[in-house]
Image (cartoon, rainbow, N blue to C red):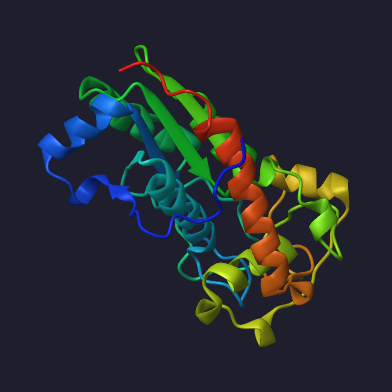
Length: 248
């Protein structure tokens, strides 16, 4: 089944704007809850600190509107990789902190009738992923959606995979929020695949000689971002939202 790319009429079912009775009615039909999990961290001088958050939120909004699934307030902070250069505004929590925070939140929502949690993130740092993937519930199912686990290599011109503040991040932001991107400040800084893996595991800091971004953001375009976003949305729709919801 093919997922619609747009929902022209419906709006996201944002939990924080709803009355308890309305929430109960939605959960009776579909007991799932989407939770965007972001970061507040530098992505190079050309992108805002909330880049990963903005991408995860936009996808979550669209999916909630299209499929009528409840949408939780965004978790704005995640586990970041250290930078060798000072990055004003960076804020980070430890893996254990994020894990415990999510455990507490999900326990509350599960007690209120949620039977499936869909955590959506655009931060592929290993420690961040571990915090999300090890969340514990009593009975509810937890599904973690890492947007950059979806292959995008054929849509990239100067990279083989997602890096950080790179061609992928920048292209998506040019499509989703172009007013927040300063392309004239973008700087390329490539690393080897092994160095990138060590960076994601938290064994290395973002290099001092880079501007904070890793990859080739100067090759980013809004057209690439649109193609990436539509692929991500389609794949997440097919694998998560077009499967039958758990019984209420």
